[in-house]
Structures are given as structure tokens and as C-alpha cells.
Length: 215
Image (cartoon, rainbow, N blue to C red; front, side, top):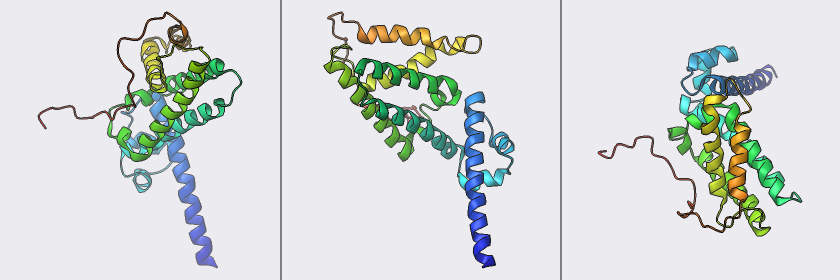
């Protein structure tokens, strides 16, 4: 009986430590970006560095876990909006939620091009995000609310672009991103009658973290 209790306690401790690590890492990456050290994360979580590596083999694995949580949050938001009565408002709410996630977490856009993006679960979550975004965009297209050549993948890419545009202002003016979101929404919904000059991407590409052509 004592052995069973000990095993159960160890598992409970492991689950608790993993949650502490994920919470501490999410906070540290959001505040400091991807260069924050494993030691800093361990200190915030109140555990030793060895505990970090028992749960995550590298910082990239930890980053992947954090990215996965954020992506799943946005996928869940978009999925819930797929049945909203107003397709235009649903797309607006999805884009607003997406930029809010990107803005609050400095590390999210910094990891683009890093090996963590190539993580299988993260790649799958990105594909699901694009599928949900396409579902929302297609509803708005059918209603004539957005221009006919806008796709869900366009929308996902635009979310990061808004964050990058507002980034220099966010410390002094944390809501400045809303200005650029509205500018983008005007461009997405304006019926100019002109087609965009380049076709949309079929999906978000895998970005090579080592672009050296001589490899």
C-alpha cells in the first residue's frame, strides 16, 4: 500500500511540476522573449534545472509546448465562432483574439523560423488554425462581407503582421495594435473590384531555420 501511495505521489508531483514549468515558461517567454534562460524559468517555477530537462529535452521542446497552448487557444476560439450568426462579426472577433494573443506574448512571433515551429504537434496545430480561419473567411466571402480573393491562410499571416507593425509602440501604447487591426479589416472588407496581384499561399510554409544555400 505504501508503494502504491509513493508512486501516486510521484506522479502527482510530476504533473504539478510540469504545470508549474509551463506557467513559468509562458510568463517568462511572454515578458522576455525566447532568449530567456532555462535557469530563469526554473527559478520562476521554484524547481531545479534538472527538473526542467526531465520534462522537456531542450528549450525548443519547451517553446513548442508553449506555442501549442497558444495555437490551441486560438483554434478553440475560431471553432466556437464558426456557428455565429454574423459571419463578418465572427471573423472580426477571431482576428481580434488572434492579435491579442500575439501581442501579449513576445515570444510567439520570435519563434517563427526556429526548430520549435517544425515540431509535429505545432505543425498540426498551425494547419488546424488555417483550416478554422478558412472556415470563418469562407462564410464571410459567401455573404459578400470580405473581398472574394481573401483566404484563411491570408488571415493567419495578417495577424502576425499586425503585431509586428504595432510592436514598436506597445510598451508605451499597449492598445496601439487596434488601430492597425482596423486598417487591415478595412482592406479585407473593401470592395474595390480589383484583384490582388499575387495568388494566395496554399498553406503556411515550413520555414528553414538555416537558410544557408551552401549546405
